[in-house]
Image 1: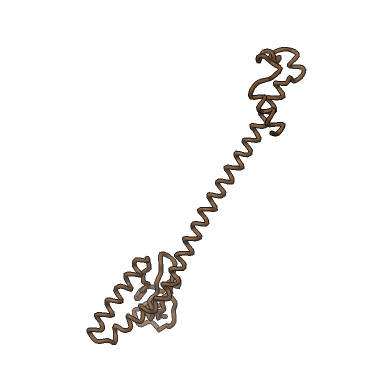
Image 2: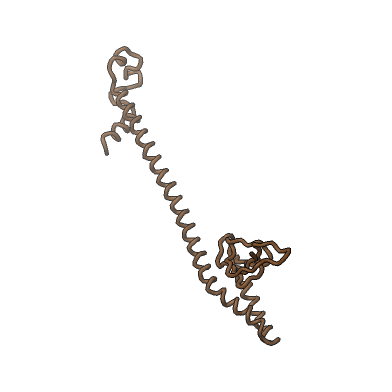
Length: 186
């Protein structure tokens, strides 16, 4: 046991030399002139309490810091997981594009089968929170579209609008997974 802790324990029990508080010299002239053993023990007790409060404060700060680390780490893992899923889904998007192209050049029986597959593909995207970006007729927005062609605007048509979409874009929330490739009027 450290010396300060022994003194603290003695101070809590009371002064060994005193039979009562009055015997310590409290209120006597002699106590005012020189510190007594009880005064020393009270000072040691106060120092120990201050040290304990410092340790408690450090402990609480460490616990809060660890809690913040845990939350930050959880968020990082969640973001990494969602980004990994998005990477896989981006690789699947050309499959959907090819299914849509196949619809334009097939017979009726094949069309029904392709439409079923395409519906399940679109359902998968919807379940993952992915929505298509199809800005046909809207003003060109470079945050969602990539202009790969331009065309002079016809009379009565304002420049800067999307005339045609060559490849649909996709996004999850505000994050663009694939930019729509479009033709823009100039």
